[in-house]
Length: 278
Ligand code: C2E
Ligand code: CA
Ligand code: CA
Ligand code: CA
Image (cartoon, rainbow, N blue to C red):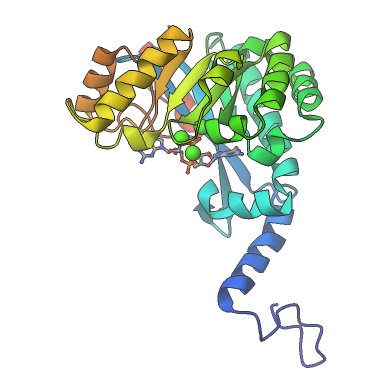
């Protein structure tokens, strides 16, 4: 219980405010989340524009805490701040590779999985070895795994990012630049980054209509992607109008609630749409 009694080994000091107590309680619970099997991956499909087939899935982390499903926005900042993201990130990569292997054995040999990497994970000294080890352990083709790194993370230390992504892509794993358009990319480095994909940040897709400022930005990003030979993905596609417009602009891949929400592997297995497969 929260108060261990009068004798005073109470973990929560009366001087702490409620929010700090909540954060501390969350941190204690999060430390145990892996061994208590409370972490899950949901998978959101990515569709070749405009309607499919599915080219792959993005793994999105969830935490089943006391019967409530928590989104990463609630607990990942704390995990990042305390370094817990390192074991959690290893769990995510391992679980995503295990699932990918299972799908391939079930015949979905074209399906890929993308895993998000946080800044701390990306800057971990042994990241490359950890990724290669995990892929080898699950005996999956490395090309079927994509690592999503945000533009902001990649541009923190561009020379180092180029080197890390070069080692990973030489091994065969793909790289994707996430949340593109919200950071400050040096085009010189963008050109050197061995990525195969750019993901346009959902903020530019929300109010996307022909003639808008966002439309100009999105079409500039798509043109940039084409010039650099990168596949361009739009995330957060929620309306048919956005789907049509992005397809017209030449966007390669679409992701969003309109086409498919993040789902459990069970929900994916029960999905009736056979045209998900190529
Ligand atoms: P993200 O990588 O930009 O992922 C896209 C987010 O948008 C996801 O939120 C997804 O569920 C949500 N989304 C998808 N389609 C739509 C749509 O049509 N409309 C709207 N409004 N939202 C949509 P989620 O799952 O809550 O994840 C939030 C962020 O947490 C992710 O943003 C990513 O940065 C981070 N994250 C998720 N899983 C992991 C993980 O395993 N490791 C790390 N390091 N970060 C993760
Ligand atoms: Ca992402
Ligand atoms: Ca994003
Ligand atoms: Ca994001």
